[in-house]
Image 1 (tube, rainbow, N blue to C red):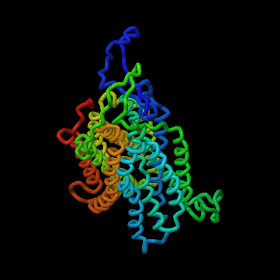
Image 2 (image 1 turned 45 degrees about the vertical axis):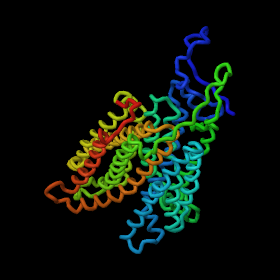
Image 3 (image 1 turned 180 degrees about the vertical axis):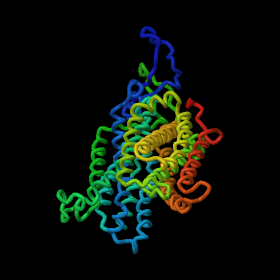
Image 4 (image 1 turned 60 degrees about the horizontal axis):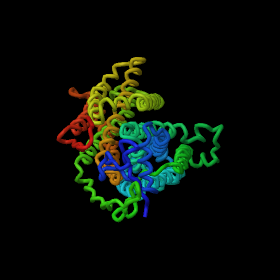
Length: 494
């Protein structure tokens, strides 16, 4: 039988027999040996920001995000080297399937890993997910044919169940006033990983060709030209995996709650604790499902925007693009990632404290619309004016997107109790993965169609692209208002 202690508050030390200020059924009970109770007690007694836990969240999220997009700069050449396409026009088809395989796998596995995290704990799932990144991402770099590469990416997505427990972990290691900061650390690290990943892939792929003085054609990096970027990312994941040794568990693990006798104060037996009531089905939880619906629409928008932004900036000016080189695009993305980091560290917390989750989400969504509408008119600029306008728009769009997704994540975590939080985030990640699988394909088709109507009288190609993106953003904004969005009554989200 586990020992338990009940937290009570008395007026002063002389009134030992006074009635506690908290009713008997509301006084928190801490079970010895329960990691969740230990974490709750630590959080209750601490008023500061849990920097150590947040650093772990950031590093882990970065390690999980790096493999997602690191292959895109060398994907075309990888398919070409594997000789799977019968002609050059077919390379895009095989590249699209390989690029979408990770999200397809995550769509299949996210809900499962969220449910498991609610049963065995956050730490085991996080550690296992990092282990799969280390092994499968390394094997992807060593792929000798297309089907090996496709299989490793599919398994990497389906076995990497980190996102759901990590979102739950963010709000379980800190006080409510720091929930927004914790989730913003996760989303910012994730976004930065999606920016740094392609840089690693672009600079380190085919090292024997680009750096012949350092890497020989006969070395392992010459025989496997895409192994080096995968190895570097796997080493980052290995470092995060080792740090899991010091990671505290946050899930409550009480044994025999139905028959547990609580020993209170002077060791007199207290009334028997009743078994908890069965939780409501997640699918019948309207606050959760309504926030997930908005989250999926915003995810669709952000993923399609990322795809179209890269295509639009490198496309020829005669098609309404900017005619940038891949190096120019990388520089814009790098500056955008740096701006996102500054916003997350120094600005976002104050914005959230002032506006709350819902209002910050709505305002950020509304501000994104005029920013997107300005992109087609940047083709009339050049030199410093173009650079300043594009950098400002890219940084602002990234910061607003992070505000939107973080606000949605807070709504989802607060719509359920702790023992359903992993499953709820798993359900959210499942929907997110589905829309992230659809978005690149839809964005590519949209961009190709828009370029063919560049000379149209009404909304030519470059303008119709961003109009459609704005319509998707507007749909997400509408879904953030009643009657579409339902909020839990016990929380004040402004």
